[in-house]
Amino acid sequence: MKKAVIAITGASGSIYAAIFLNKLCAAKDQWTDLSVVMTENAREVWRTELGNESYNEYPLKFYTTNDFSAPFASGSGQYDTMIIIPCSMGSLGRIASGVSNDLITRAADVILKERRKLICVVRDTPYNLIHIRNMETITLAGGIICPATPSFYSKPTSIEEVASTVVDRVLDLAGFNIKTFRWGK
Image 1 (cartoon, one colour):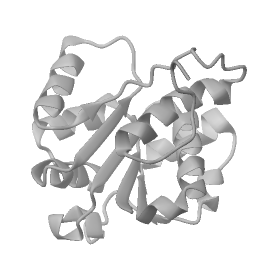
Image 2 (cartoon, rainbow, N blue to C red; image 1 turned 30 degrees about the horizontal axis):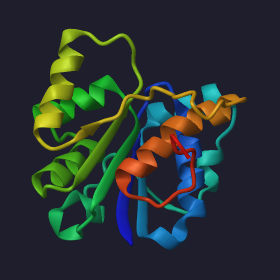
Image 3 (spheres, one colour; image 1 turned 60 degrees about the horizontal axis):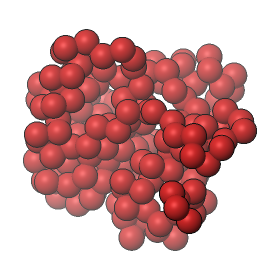
């Protein structure tokens, strides 16, 4: 049973966050606590890309980016996993620099200092050298960089199925037990 925090930043890719939350809500037998932090930019991008405000409909605890009383803002909260989906390059850069100026960057700092699992689903392309160095820094600190790069082995036929190839990979990395396409099976 996992205690996980999900952060949604303002990078393009709201479909990844929506599918991810849907799949985690369907797998509620695998977690004891699932908390969400969503930036205001993420809400705007969600409305633009998905044309709705369905983030308000999830039966999960949402925190504002300035709520440092959230349990995962401290190592004593014992959250074992943090997934940032999508992860903007701004958030990635602040995490890599150790700047904890909001709840997302503070929670990421806590996860890294406690040697727990941080997964950053970066969506931007192409990368500049600063992005690459920030990804290297987070990787060296113990984080996982998982670019939102879909696979096509499963022959997806819709945009949701394409996005699910990324989401399923992230769920695997986070240690959730899911049914998904497996190569060679």
